Image 1: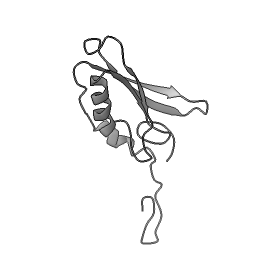
Image 2: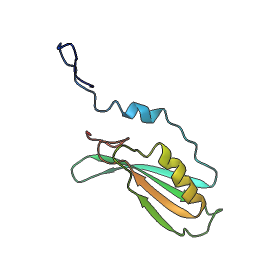
Image 3: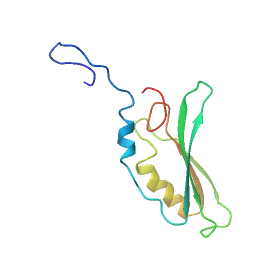
Length: 111
């Protein structure tokens, strides 16, 4: 268990932002013809949500077919497998929007 000691000694506080170190090491390349925009959006409570938007280039399609807004699961974050999924939809002409929930991935807050 993180932040606890099995020997009954002092406990060390768990660093809640340690998970963000994992995100920094992931580098899935964005394919040619797809634009990936990233932005931190400040919410009314002051927390920051990390967002990504994959947009097909005009060389793929002149006007997007539609927008897909993906709400990811509890343990997932936008820097991993959803980057590949987003690119596959962008190649088919869709704009794909995704965000990390509060306390997950690159978004601020605690789990």
